Length: 251
Image (cartoon, rainbow, N blue to C red):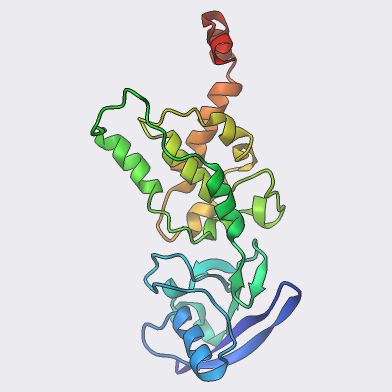
C-alpha cells in the first residue's frame, strides 16, 4: 500500500463536510502521521489536537472509521484494509471547535466538583496500605483523560444527559477515591445523585475503547453501584441502621 485516502471532517460548530486527502504511506504509519503529512504538505489550516505521540497524553482522540481511538495508536494499515479510505471525525459527544478539535471542558468542570482525598485525623503517617488496596486504585490512576470512554458511552453520546450523568471517566475518579482505605469522605450520595451512577447500564463499551486497558465497568462502576445499592436500596441494611440508630446519627 503506497498511498491512502483520508476523509477528514472540516468544519466547526455550525457544521462541515468531509474532505479527501491522498497521503503516501510508510511502514508503521499511524493516523496521526497522516494528519501531520496533510498539515505540512497539503493543507496547513487543518486543526487537530496532539502532544506526546506516545499514547500517554490523550490529546489526539478522534473517531476513526466510526470508532473512538487515539490517532497516535491507530495504524493506517489496519484502518485502510482492502484499499478503503480512512474516515477521521472529531469526537461525537462533545461540541466541535474546529475540524478535529472538540470542546471537552465539560469533563474538567465535573472533575473540579469532586473533592480530593480527605485523610481521616487518625490516618497513620506515613500511610501504610495493603498491596491489594494499592493494586485496586492504581489501575484507576492510569487514566490519561483521552475521554474515549466518555464519547463512546451511549448515555452521553446518544441521550446527552450531561446534567445528570458524569460519565465513565469521572466515575473512575470517584472509584479511585471511594475505594481508598484512608479516604474519610462518604461519597455515595454524590455517586448516586450528582454523578448519576444509576444511568450506566454496564454495556462495557467504555472498557473496550480504553487505551490503558482499565477495567472501567467491572472494577470501577459495578462496585460503585453495589455500594450505592447497599446504602440506599438494601432493606436488611436499612433495618440494621434503623435499629442501631445509625440513620439518626447521620442526620
